[in-house]
Image (tube, rainbow, N blue to C red; front, side):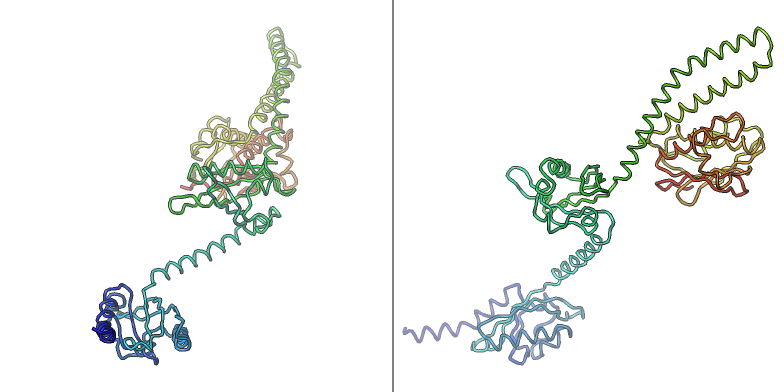
Length: 478
């Protein structure tokens, strides 16, 4: 058999070979002529787009392309017609048989000169799922950018890189808030380790926390010292790992400048230490001679009567009350670290029962539960109840309830406190009641502040005194 005969036989088998190939592959194969009219569609059209091949043959492909994508599709077709040696890939939305739109990625090749194909060959696949993932990723990225650019807390992103047997941390990005608060920019730190940015010693301390988070495999919180500006030294940081394919590839840190709070707590601790030292002197150096004086006065009272004995005993009792209140003041100002759930009704009831209230009336207007130290808080309510009776009389009415959504109030219907004296009454040594030590309301203030709350004095509903506690965390109202 000569070569010409063999070539003709091979050509005769080509149409059957092509048909078998396109019918078996998963991709959709389409042929259109130079005008865009469909001349062939592979059977995959039924599985991918729900049509019978005969429904599309003879129609212009543009009829099934989304109007917004037709120009892009036409440009790709024009490109392969103008340059037969190059292929073009285009993504368009194609109408499904059920009327919905499916994303199709089509690669066009010019096969006009091919005797068998005689047109533009398109190899297409359904990429709807991929496009949906891209859309979701794009929306997530937009949300991520919005959060990163708008939150007040400083945010930093760290890449976790393999480094031999361990990992290495490199800065990836800083939020605008981080840059504003620290003066450090993303451009300055991107790709650098904490040691390179903050120095070997301080950077190693930072990296130790990052290693701890990676080892834990879950978010961690901690306070760190990082001096980056005059007003930013102490930071409260929450660090969370990002897992990809089972590996931690990134850390996301959210940090808040707490320098003012830390300095305030430090000052309060120092004040409490000094007050504790003072209280210790009073307790040891004053109480002993005071007890001696009280004992001798009691002996004098047994031996005879004197107009000077009652004033003497009252003065000694007052001295003892001052010593007790001073010790209470010293002990109750420490910052509270452990709390428990407290019922306002139960606590108020216990405190009211321990105070000599005479004919006074207590009204609990609201019930709520909140987090506090109940032992220390008893001093608050007991002192406020005594204060109400001392100034409002034995028939005073005291009300306790919820203040706004984040606090508690205690008020009475007594004479009230003038505006110009509301700050003064909270200072040590101030007392307008005969025989008072002047420390009762100061103790109230110190315990309230030790909880992290704020105390303010206002007018009561009926014109009396009203004390309001603003809590840092919302109570649970019942």
